[in-house]
Amino acid sequence: MATPQTRINHQIRAAELRVIDHDGANMGVISLSDALKRATEVGLDLIEISPNAKPPVAKIMDYGKFQYDENKKLKHSKARTHTVEVKGLQVKLGTGEHDLVLKAKKASEWLKEGHRIKIDLFLPGRAKYLDQDFLKGRMERILKLLTEEYKIADPAKKSPKGLSIIIEKV
Image 1: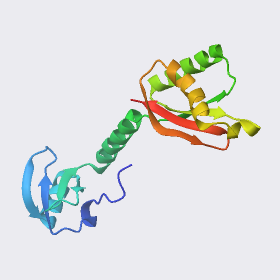
Image 2: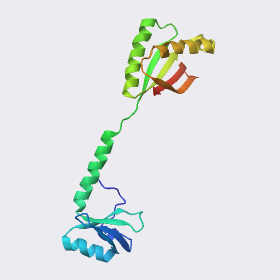
Image 3: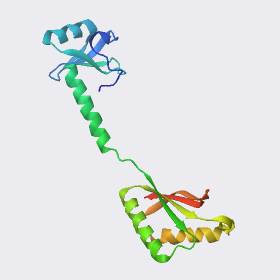
Image 4: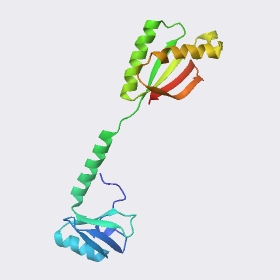
């Protein structure tokens, strides 16, 4: 659907417009009444394309075709956008090497796809009060196993679960 501020025919407020013909030829700066007259002569609508320009730019064309083209552009731009998810990975203090390798492999796949990854070092009970350097060393174990290039988006912080770090693709 066309943008809500798109004005057509008698909704246009500007006294003078730079008008583009239905063939794409520039008709120059003419008054609104002349532009409307020319649009009705060919049986088309006068559509304000660029309202913020000085003078505003209008085009003589079919409004239905204009809406169709705008929808097509919108769908094309939506199809090209890639949403980045934050994927979660949970590791415990005593997680074995083999399990860490598997988790790092999965994390590397996610990085390759362009997702951010939140790695939680789960600390039950009193483990939350262990030496911070020791806990960061435990977090480094999994980061060393990653095969993809990454950068730390959010450094290691205490969280309700324990210690969390967010990484993303370089």
